[in-house]
Length: 147
Length: 147
Image (tube, rainbow over all chains, first blue to last red; front, top):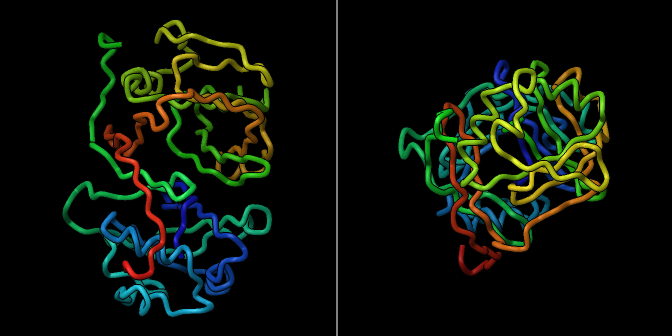
């Protein structure tokens, strides 16, 4: 599935909160297996990202349909997507927020990240079919004389 | 305060989940008043954003120190920052996640957004003093023949 709402919730352990709509095919799969892989695509996969968001795993095999390569994980049964820049193997850390917020709190148990580029071109959803491409990296340190 | 971890959690009502560290001066202020304003700065305010993140309201008046203009809200007692692109007046909708996750679930009760530009240059924290500037906007609709 394509996911738009998520946030870091902690470093130790490494927690990520994810909203998964209860009508999504993934909802029960993840709730039952208590694990998943979060894959981070770059913008060259943009059309596939959107197509995956508009289709359901109830109807098609998305790996086949979108010509993506499933790679076995080392800590979870769910596969990684080889074409993605980063993949985070996750176990469900807290299911308590699911009934109220459809929110899954995952712990990252294994991270796979490409060595380069250091700052890939990622895509960020603004809503209504509009995305923001990740822009320039910059460093901004606190310089009191510079306010 | 400067805040890095947040996510949309719903549309109706409009909910935003925010992580506020329990050591922050803002933590008790927001927990007690049960309201806040979330202001969205553009990159021209970048040095102030970082300075605000590195200082505490226990020690200084940040509006004075960083030369920002407080504007009264219409639905909450907390002030808006006039120099920011957007300001969301919020009421605490759910305090139950605070003890476990330092997470405040706010409802946006009034939104103020500049009419232009439509896509401002915003800044997004990557960690370790590095930010990403918001990049190009693009539209990507699902075109099955184009996978």
